[in-house]
Amino acid sequence: MTRSCAKWCFPLLMLTGLFIHVACMSISEYAAEKQRIINLEESVRFGSSLVLDKQERMISDILITAKRAEIEASRVNGTVFSPAINFFKSRNRIGSSKVFQIIKRMPKGGALHTHGSAITSLDWLVRNVTYRSNCYMCYDKYGHLQMHFYDTPPKNSYCQWESVKHVRERSGNAHLFDQQLIRNISIIVDDPDSTYVTVNDVWHKFSLYFKVVNGLYRYTPIFKDYLQQALREFEEDNVQYIEIRATLSPLYELNGTKHDQEHKLQAYRDTINDYMTTHPDFIGCKLIQSGIRFYKKVDILDDIKSYIKYQQNYSDIVRGFDLIGQEGPGNPLSYYLDDLLYPSTLNPPVSVPYFFHAGETDWEGSQVDLNLVDAVLLNTTRIGHGFALHKHPRVMKMIKQKDIPIEVNPISNQVLKLVEDLRNHGAVALFADGYPLVVSSDDPAAWGALPLSHDFYMAYMAMTREDAGLEVLKQLAINSIQYSAMTSDEKMEAMKKWEKMWTEFIIETLRRYVRGGQVIG
Image (cartoon, rainbow, N blue to C red; front, side, top):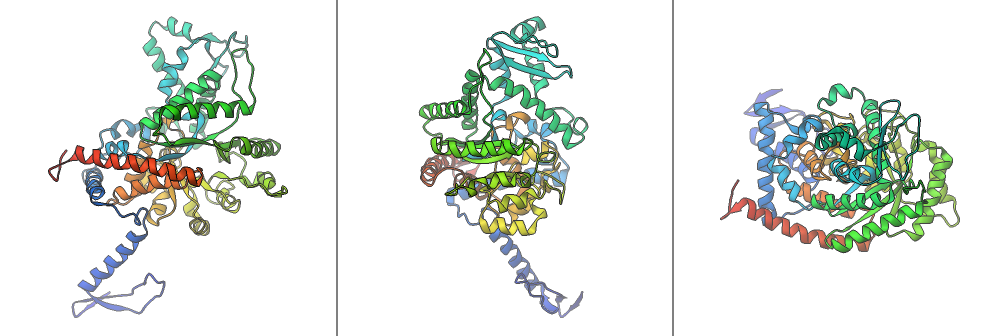
């Protein structure tokens, strides 16, 4: 680089893609060119198309100031930046964040990626469900806890069932017993880095969590109470809508009777409708029926056939199909290709909306990674996780062209060891380039997170620019309705409810933080 006549001379690569000859620019011209590039980047980033009104801009300024304070405290003073460390270590400190406090009160729309057995807090499960009659526990030959409801427990040589009530009484301290029970079931640990060295380590504990919870909440009376509690906890976290990846594993009775799939669907429907009757501001709950990606092809085909059947009689709650389970060791989408294409071979063809988990991996070029290609080719409605998406530039273009939203689950990806520092998450590039995104929480109860607020906080703080404001959070909430599995009419009604709550949030937030036109607190 040379300098002549107070001008900087250097090659410029124009954003049109044309490489131009060496240009000499004055300092002011250089500054103008730099600003032009910044403006172009700002014009495409997530939320840039939203225009905030005067009141929203005031709150946005409050948010940005608080966000910058947290970032600068870490960048300049070396304090801990919460999204950069495992959530098990950061969750207790996040509550004092002003940004988090605002996000928590914000109507966030919907959580579009959750799993049925990890949406109700473990604390409620232990302190409520395990106190009920006929609740039993035992430890198998590997020392793993199992829990179940029985009229008369089986006499298994591998697992000596005991009444939880009697074990709790024998402990002499119910409070300590409950705390120990929560620790036993939970995957939360003090030192996650040494406890869970590999992805498989944490997934192994995760599978044990599901085994215990499933034994409890699949008891028919508990299932209904569990789901009601989940909806209550989401609404208390200012989430108005939820979509659950739901397997149709049977519910059971005390005498061992197992019900069919339709019984479970009816239980979902009745429980959801009962909740909405008494909570008119709640928008609703839909199911994405899910098969297990470890199962045989014939089992997945049966699941798809059952979905086609239920699509007729339960269309008010069942809205799509997915394959779930740890993606790494599980079968790829291509393994089930014939089964997934089965609906299109019928006469007439049947449309099955797919909502595929895909790319929940940090390996490149593996069959797991390539699930992203199959998901797009199979015309998925949304993509769950999409963590590896940034490694597939062609697929990224297709996703943007097709307007396929990515369900980003920040805490899940961190806890399950795909990324340590969320600033390095692949979704950072998606936010920067205005991709269709929603933020969800996956299995919040398993890691002690709030239903959605913690994940919104993580995404906002770690995945968007320091000067990104309320427009990002508002766009996420709007997207969660627009990209939901609701019908067009349902979405219109949902937006009316959400907009009313959004207006109330804006007014309440201004009252809390602004006096006489001046920001306080």
